[in-house]
View (cartoon, rainbow, N blue to C red):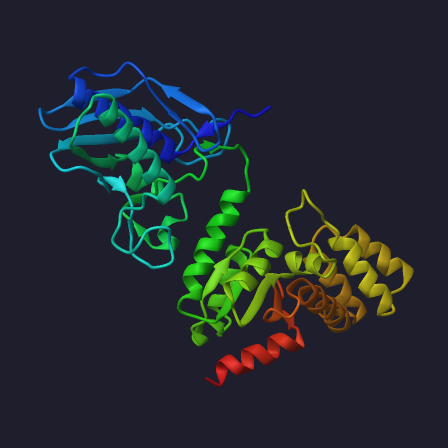
Length: 366
C-alpha cells in the first residue's frame, strides 16, 4: 500500500501551533499535533524553532508520503507574534504566492493560503491561546523559503499566483497518486477563464498548445485551457461553469480515442486507436490487407501514411470526426456548443467537425 502524507496546509497549522506554544510558554515545543479534516491526527517534531524576542517561529518538513509532489521535503515556517487585540491575523511571507487574478479561493492581493488551511491555522493557534488563558490574539506569518523555486514546477504561474507556492489542502491529508488534485486545478483555471469569456478552447497538452500558436485561432482571443487526459471531467466542468461555446483541439492520437467514447485518454485506461482507425477504414472500403496493416500500425501517423497510400485519408478522418462530434454531443447533452479540430505533428491540420467550423467562423466574424 502507498503511504499517505500531509498537505502544506497541515504543515502550516502544525508550525503555527508550535510557534504559538513557544510564544506563550517561552519554551520551544518538542512536538506539535493537529487533527485533520480526514479525521486523522498528525503529530510531528519541529525541524527548527527560534525567537528574536518578539516573534517566535517553528518549522515543519513537508511529508507527501508516496505521492509525487514537488513540495515534498521543504520546510514550512510559521512566525507568531502575540497581540493585545483578539483574533488571529494570517498572512504569507517569503515563498508563499500572492493571488493576482480573480476566481481563486482567496481574493486578489491575498496570500495564497486557502480557506481550509486558514481555518486550521486559526484553530491551532486559538487552542494554544485558550489553553494558556491568553486574552489577546496573534499575528501569524507563513513562510516557505524554497517556495518561489518550487512554484516553477506547479500550475501557480498559469493560475496567476506569483512569488511562491500555495498553502492548500481540503482534508489535510495527501493521498498518493490522486488525480483529483489535477482535476481540481483544471477546474480552478476554467473558473478563472469563465469570468472573462463565455467561450473556451481546450487541448490536452503541449502538442495542442504548439499547434494553436500557428493555427490563427489565437487571434480570436479565446482563452485556452490544457486538460491533460481528463477530457470527460473538463467537458462536465465547462457545463457547470456555463460556457457557451467550447472547441476541442487535439492531436489525432488523442482525438481518435474520443471517437470511441474514451473520455480519459491516458493509455492505462484505454487505447483503441488502431482498432478505431481500422473500423472506419473498413467502412470506407479498405481491403483486408490494408485493415491488417492499420491494426499493426505503431502510431497514428503511421496509420495516416497507410490511408494516404490507399487514397482513404480524407474519408476516414471525416468519418472519425463525425463520430467524435457524436460522442462530444452525447457527453455535453446540449449544455453548450462543442466542436473539434484535429491535427498531426507530421501532417499538420487534418480536419474539423462541422460544428467546429461554425464556431470558428463566428469567432472570426467578431
